[in-house]
Length: 330
Image 1 (spheres, rainbow, N blue to C red):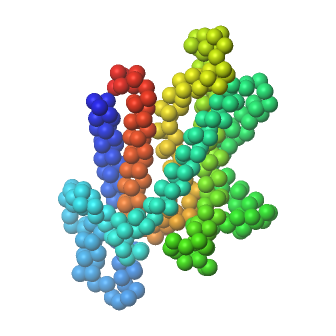
Image 2: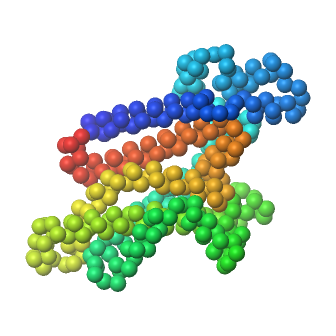
Image 3: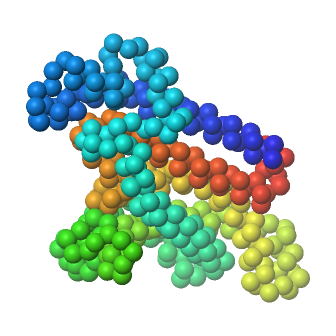
């Protein structure tokens, strides 16, 4: 418990730094965050000076207020769950993120779980059968690990996507068929959601699973030369039992690196959502940046940071639970 409390403290500091950075970025980058909202308001009528001041107050960018006062107000609003107001969508940022987040989380959880479990199993088998034809999978793993997420997504769209140029098997844009289906708990909508998730999910799986395969394979090769594995083999234990002993110990460093992998997968998934116009927070973050909708950008950035921190904390908790040495070191 003491080790976990200290880790929570570290992540709390990391979260505070990320929130502070999200506050500073819109105020130091070129461009006026209020200009877009003023332009939108001017379309429906004249936006005088009082209108501009009201928009600045709503967005928290009053030029007559010091940054410190704006920061205190920003932290206070976050503490009450207020992420601001999106001028481009004319809606609270919190409600918009609640609409976008399930798409991203569903894709992230499924892809990360499948890539970790599948990569660990495949890496274990390759290491145990080293020298066989399974070693041919290693160059493929290295190839997919080196490919950028967005590039692999574009290639898959060109080959398998309905908007591509070759096979045109599966949908390649949006999260569902926006023209023929109605969102809700109905069979056509659910089938459309599943079919539209195939290419984004495959892109993330191929890119992230390769890293787990190579990491587990390398760690298994090292572990199989340990004395306890040689003794188990000398005792004549069944091969699957020896593999289980070796894999259980080789898995510990892979779990430790899982926290780094989560950050890479989240960063790659943002690009994948942009490529496929997938309606997650990554795609809407890109859209908000194009519209200079800084309140929405801030809110999405904070939520992404908190999701990554929560995932890392869960991974750390699992690692401390399965490895007593981590508790003593912490």
